[in-house]
Length: 364
Image (spheres, rainbow, N blue to C red):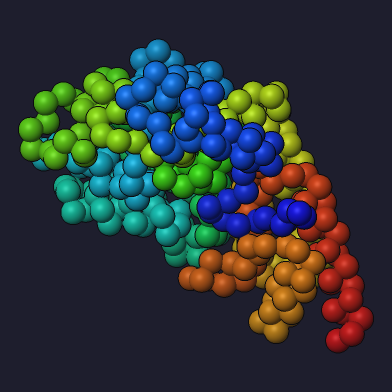
């Protein structure tokens, strides 16, 4: 079977090596005679898988001892609510930086819980850039500052993170976690849906500094209380066992690639190939993001006309490329090149883009 050249924005490509191993173990995990989906989540076998997934994240991201790693459900979207519910007291406000649709949604949910302020936004600039970290006015009285590290729809990404001193920095890293080296100690909370770089949809990683976990929050439903999940090692209720198993396999795969440093170098190489096809096209391909804000995960661009874009996507599909249509809210084209997208597929896409440009201009 020939694998698709998968550039979907999420759920996204998984490492083929991981899928092959999962297929091999599907009916009989660790000689149990059962699939991982049939195991009790209280069993020793699953407990080992669960803990391996958590330890893999700790090892790869060099997570300090004063952080808890939680494996939750509900996607990053539930974290939009859980964060203010747990971390925004009635006598404080939370600061937000708007850089795209997902940060807007995070703000909308926080507004339902407490007071919020927008301290920076690139909305008036069609979300083409990330605000300069040096221009951010950090309010020392804020409960936290929330950012979205990578913006899948608009193709922008933070290259530097603000220094917030005593104010906890909270980042939605759903679309670029594990794609580059970061200093976890700069953040109060990092959260990410797994379905782009970590594994399949269904599990959400929350990395939270332990001093931010407030116990006995009696006003919160138990499922929305970080302290409940931390106390039970993320096993308060039945977890998404298959998703966590695949997460553990992806962590092993990243280690085999040479860790996050090696993954970051490969991601830069992949992104440079496609951005070169855009920059060298003499304006045929028009990148959405400003150069210094370009994402290495989601490359967004337009063609000269809607007709040209339609033909581009049609021919790309015929060549086996999947997921190149831009988000429905803005249109255009988008190539999502997460960790598991092979370099060869990016090379093939860059070559296709160059060939399509030459053919289109020749026949126009």
